Image 1: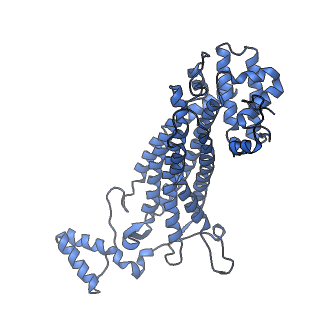
Image 2: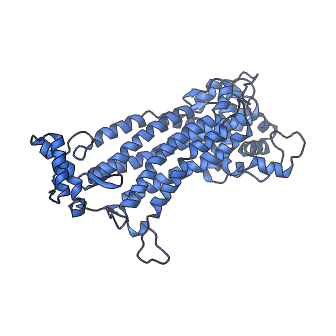
Length: 444
């Protein structure tokens, strides 16, 4: 089968294998979005006279059939087809003859992959945001449920002061709120239409790029045609920073859970069916899920560097290096979604130990509480600090186990409602409904 750029010269097989790379595998993720982009493009072509009014409904009907195969899992890129763009055009031409060959007017494969990636990333961000929202809600629920379950707080991995599971769960909820802000910024960059930049320098056809922007539900255009091409890589890079921030939250949570689940601490317990065993140690119940969340998220934290190095020192215009971005960002997206799903599953099934701070080994966690009590009774802080320090050294320290923290965000005043309001305010800034309506109208 010929390629979209075929000029009658057969490509060396080794060169072809190397340059195609993992495109067939990665492009399966882009297939529904390539169809949507083509539907919007040909609707615009008909409006400017490059397609007949009798041809458009026929092409759209066939494209809807192809779209259905992408949704059912039956879409394939055949072995002798170079990429998803070639496969879609091949299917159209196979079904409709010369009419199918008209859909490429006014665009290039660079143009197609740009809009495909934007549509794909926009869709994936929406899915990630949904998983973040679900995890956030779980953390807030757990924070409220366990607000009175005290635990030691640590600095330098040494027992420091009283904390609580209410504070711990709430901390990761608020961390997700900031991660959502970064996802929102990335989404705003993603949700701009590059279609119509062609090979990066526009077209002599009178393309209506505002029309395709509306049809595909983009919030705005990438107006400058050269910058539209330059946006490839920059778009992925911006999303990778947001994903890395989210991965940092998850990996740190995973590390905490691995420690808290250990026999030495025993703050939490995972159900047996959520752990794995050892081939020689019958007692082992390993938190492998949390360890894999930690490992996968640590790899995602390297993603911005990986993408940055791929696009470093590239001049303006298209370069084949950019093909590698798909191999970097798509598996990472799959990983972060899986990690979010598994983290929530593990948290929903965790058991929390009660009365942890009643154990004598945690008595010194209350030293600050005793200092503060003396200050409230009138003793200068520095004198109170010295008295408690000397009592500890002399073995005479008596802990003050009543914890009375009332300020914003502390053990007794978690501010979970305010954290939820902050999270939901950012969530409401996404234009998911307008995108869904646009795509629904396009597929009618």
